[in-house]
Amino acid sequence: MAKTCVLTEETKKVAPKLVYLLKRLLDEWMSKKLCRIDQPGFNSAHLPLFMSIGKTGISNNELAAKMNVSKQATSKIVKELEAINMVRSEKSADDARVVMLYFTTEGEAFYYNLKSQVADLENEYKKVAGTKNYEIAIEVMLKLVKFHEENNCTGQKS
Image (cartoon, rainbow, N blue to C red; front, side, top):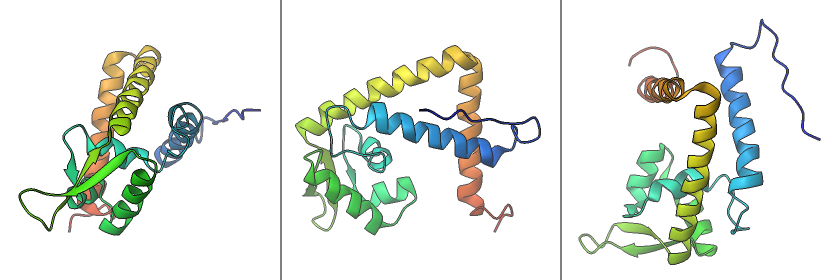
């Protein structure tokens, strides 16, 4: 039975709480709808890195930097994605020290499946909030992410 989140007037506009609730609800949506369809070994921890690989591929180092995680964390998830035949790695033709990541044929099909489902969810969000408000919300979230990346969550410039 699904639990309804009850927010009082006093607590409903507390940003960290709203972000937490939205993340939890998105995680639930991903585990029920997004990640389990057609690929039982895929889970929500794979999603951000998997979707960041993109159609043209990316180096392991670029992926770690893009996701703001350690190379070791990226490598662990990449190995899990390789184990379920979603991603393949190969040495770069330009620099043998660089490992490039690409989708497998199965991974590419799954990538497009995921993109389609995310687009459907975004369309639902636009119906609920309005397209303009949704686009503003995305811009605000990007600014907040940048703020935290630049300030390392301290609230003060280094």
